[in-house]
Image 1 (cartoon, rainbow, N blue to C red):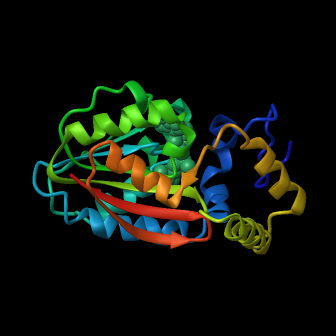
Image 2: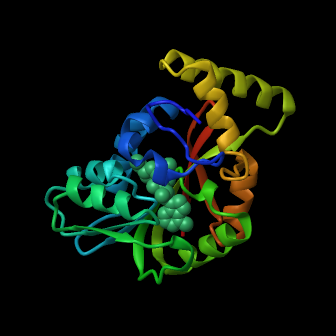
Length: 233
Ligand SMILES: C[S@@+](CC[C@H](N)C(=O)[O-])C[C@H]1O[C@@H](n2cnc3c(N)ncnc32)[C@H](O)[C@@H]1O
């Protein structure tokens, strides 16, 4: 099944393993303002990462966000640990980010033994983790963050009203078509994500974060059906 960027899924379900070869190009074409928001996160990270600070990225993929964050901290001895379930993503991240402060590990964030950290970033990853596990993970992330630390969470989201959801779905299809993706690739991708991507509403994510301990949650980004939150400990 063709979902664009020469990605042929071997089965009907979306798999990051099938997409690794052209992942960078695919995510750029699929997520509005993808690199711009990585740069924005990188700037924001400077408020939390000081000498000897630790940062985790859940779903590091090929390391594009890690590269942006570390480039903004040239003089700071921090530790940046990127986790990903896909071995090949981890290898690509290691190749891309040749920085002694960076470590990429093949691990499932759901059961990874996190050490105390000042910042955790999840850039479009938690939506792929089933909700009960996502909630347990967020509770653990709240526990390992040091006071004053934060979680930067970007997710695909659902609208509160059906009318807006319908509009956003159409606008998002228009966006992808304008990026050069074919109608069949857009449709096939949506089909392949069934049961794989499990987004919550904008408010649903805010409530989930609060339930997991994050009392102060700010919306820092919103475009189409995508949102970014800054959740403080
Ligand atoms: C949309 S991509 C993340 C993009 C990346 N942050 C960037 O800036 O390029 C989601 C990534 O999360 C990984 N992933 C999915 N579930 C995971 C889990 N439970 N633990 C760790 N990584 C996971 C996938 O393999 C994939 O590489």
